[in-house]
Length: 295
Image (cartoon, rainbow, N blue to C red):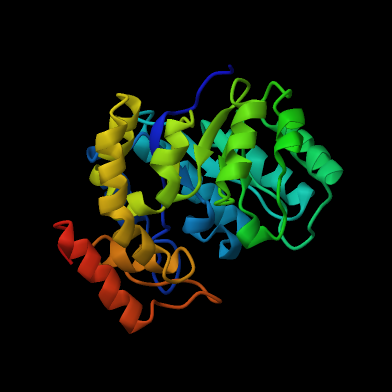
């Protein structure tokens, strides 16, 4: 097995914004909140961070700020993927330059590359990166499924160390574990499957939920790491209503609504994303209150 970037719970953080740009004061406070609540890693400029609508120079600055603020207390993983390999290489070099500990690279969206194309794409990124690469498979958003046999090929690359698996298909995840579980770390990209995935041997989760409930999310993965799956399973079930509320609209709309209600940032997103609809917002806040989260 290659070096592990993290085990347990990583937060794919929201990017606080104002009407005119990135809110770095809010980002700094939010990073401290995450670390104080025991999070095991930070993923910056992922889907939850609205990277698709943030300019490359601003992405680099957000990553740099995050690296400096976190100051090696936990690993910082930078999302650098797009549907253009040349742009991914540019983003990845930027992330390496400003000190990210690893990069998270999503399958190219819209283009819908073949499996051979995916091998060439990720190999080019891994060759160019000076830090470890974590693959990201989320076909519900990209229209492109990185198949387990393809991941097995990519796992032979010395710089590809993990995959965030977010198909929601347990059969595919089990096949992935069978083919690659001794070669790379596998992370759940589905909050609702954290415990089932870790019971199968996953190293942890890259989470949306932990934006809002980091303490509870970390407790769940800590129970898994301790082998107490009965306790972890109860936590998974108890958190399911909040998880469902976090995905009642497209991510990161609910996550940003929740973090905003907690007082960390404004509820501002970049088009084409818009603020949460009031009915869904009320349900989200209700589930947050049930866990004792002040909103």
